[in-house]
Image (cartoon, rainbow, N blue to C red):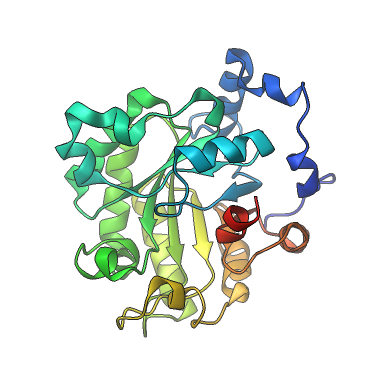
Amino acid sequence: MWCLPTVRPNVSEMFKCSSSLRRFHSPMLKQATAARFSTTSSSPYLPPLFSVAPMMEWTDNHYRTLARIITKHAWLYTEMIAAQTLIHQQTNLDRFLAFSPQQHPIVLQLGGSNVESLAKAAKLSHPYGYDEINLNCGCPSPKVAGHGCFGVTLMLNPKLVGEAMSAIADNTNVPVTVKCRIGVDDHDSYDELCDFVYKVSTLSPTRHFIVHSRKALLGGISPADNRRIPPLKYEYYYALARDFPDLKFTINGGITSVSKVNAALEKGAHGVMVGRAAYNNP
């Protein structure tokens, strides 16, 4: 069972900027940080203590630049980028993948359901030097889950997700992670969630899941309503952390303040991800 270390930093300390923190991006420190989070390192994988969620049309280069001025330690995510977009825009990849080196540590979130396309997208992103690659298995938007057959719909096909994560991992040298919900429509039992996590982690080197602690409703409601109507079930998250001691889990959903972040960490969360609260109140 995962347990808290003797000393765990208070998240509020991570927002303090100093001249020493500005040296974080030196090549030596960057290499040390990459080794710390590498699946090939002799040390166990440690998930980010605090991260800002990927948000379409929000976590773009402009927001990430602002966020990095405020914090040198929080992990940042790109907006979700469809794998097919990168494949079709190979002559214009900078538009979608380029970022300032000061934005490290940064995670690329991919969207898609075609294994070959996801593998190719991961390979195309490799020269840009992202610190991790994440697959979106949690977006409930009808444009994504409905017509695109990816996003949260992927939770209904854990075998496909496992194969996709394995293919992504084969085309990168950084850790691969999954962002998901706790269920979809009537497929919302804890056993079904465990089945998803077990199959994905068994079929791929995925060792870190970011779990939005609500299920998704695909009956035509808006993404905003999907963040409000389904109840939060944090007990599912903490049960996963208990029942899968070899994996790491980041909690997401309904966490809107530093005090709530610290409360989750004190309760045993491996890491905490905050979404719109970090955008609306940087």
